[in-house]
Length: 319
Image (cartoon, rainbow, N blue to C red; front, top):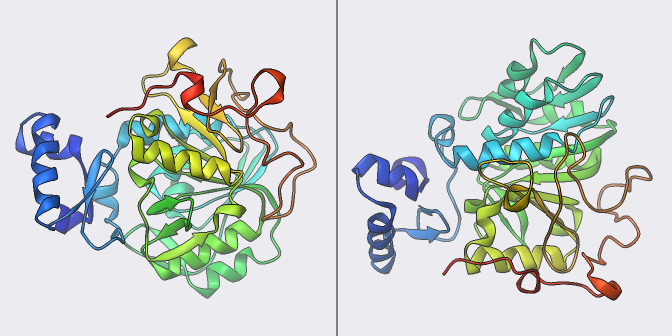
């Protein structure tokens, strides 16, 4: 399955072979020792350091619950009347389904899946780029797509990719997709990356967005359950990336509330609210791409204005 899809989750492996995730995790660990695959938190990828991009049918089954939770939280960052650009991917497709309920929205996209999700939305204008169709992910790529994005100015860009690290930023396995995503980033005042926990610490061949150009990361709460991914979150936060953790299972408060963090030191928990689950600076005065708002690197603070770390906030990491 890993060879066919490029990546697979432990949950999917357990379902296919009809055994427990504990057993699958042990077997994956043994295969990694033989050099047959590389473990990632919650799954496995082909060996060699760079993750291969699975096709759309495979992607739809990978981390489905996590993608849904991420899309819920990301949609709360969009306000009535916004103009946004949304990249290709199954997570951004989930986001688009939720954006259909935001009135007065303008969405620019190179994704046929995103456009389809918004096709019948009332009071949502959809603008498609040109370009050449890349059938594996139903996205328009190439010079036509990139030229359509030149001169564009929107409030936010929502993009995904194959992997995310503090060292390389967001990356993907396809050169043409990476070029279009970079054009989207240049068009946006804020760059919001949507990446589930299995992509943290992974690296695609082509860099899409450097870490210092990422405004915010929306990931799922499982990212804090493993030491490796939690350290990656720490490193991203130290680079000034605001971290939002989407709860799995939903709820109105307590441990099910979305978790947010800004800058050095990852996250703290806040009470959710429709269209208002956010942290960091208030709207307005958006920076140019690659720039930061004043204090963006200051991080979440505790009493007395001192930065706080994940361990100090009592968030538990898995072993």
